Image 1 (cartoon, helix red, strand yellow):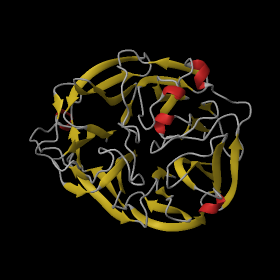
Image 2 (cartoon, helix red, strand yellow; image 1 turned 90 degrees about the vertical axis):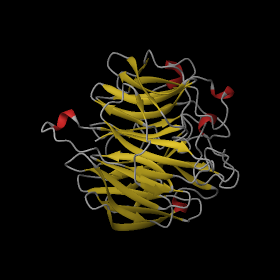
Image 3 (cartoon, rainbow, N blue to C red; image 1 turned 60 degrees about the horizontal axis):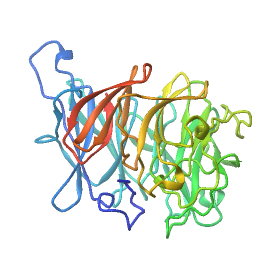
Length: 405
């Protein structure tokens, strides 16, 4: 079921939630060899209570491939709805609904988890990304505000260093701009968005891709880049409309999926390219997702390295997709350079969560929790050999984050 966020007052029951996040440390040990007791994985488990609200438990695990993953008896409560993202060795929980704070979670030398910093903002943040080894950039882009706010955050203390406001009118003249993705490359910050009606949540403008360009670090508005080969970038609450490779080239993803919030589809789906330091789309590059997948579209992307990205591909044609369903999905690897799509065998077709992809990349593998009829199970996917192994069962309603610290 698709998780509509705090701006959807009519969202389905699992989407309108007041959640709590729990963080716990690893147990101590007298064993002098820490590798035997180390719990490198952290999984954020969402469990529904008797009041139909959800509570999140972020729990460390040493093994995610056998037995079951449970939050019973573990955790420190932090009330509110949170989106999770990992940057370096820190997990950031981004508050939504009535919570507008951000908390960092890191690992101590003894393997336990600790809370680092706690920042509040005027509105919930759309996202946080890494700018450099010392700085994060956080974005406020709300339908209730006429300002786009860029916050720079100290990566060590999780404290705000500066805030710059720019008018939303730079992006849209009517309706509102909904966040799709953000990346910094060279002297620019690229902000992808799509146009939506803040009252009906429909998408009245789907005839082109739009990416705003700001200078970095000054956040001065430069221009709006447009490309009519595809529709808008990204989708509702997915936050993966832009990915960046090692060369600094940025790849925008367009799909206009009803399953990811679009009320109409008027253009083809595909992946574009912005070369590092450019303020225009690369007219010579286009990865035609529909041609490579027999009419299917990519909903989620996670960059792996060497030009390859892990993808969740919607296996239903857009004309037949149920709006807000975020599925049915199939896991795959997209080679951005060779322009190929390879499905990963052994992973059942599944539904997404309608939110940021909860998956972790570790070497040649991607770990992700897949809902099945019998329950939710971890799948360890080999992204070089395109095979998968089924792992532990997860005792939760859904998984909101999967990390390795």
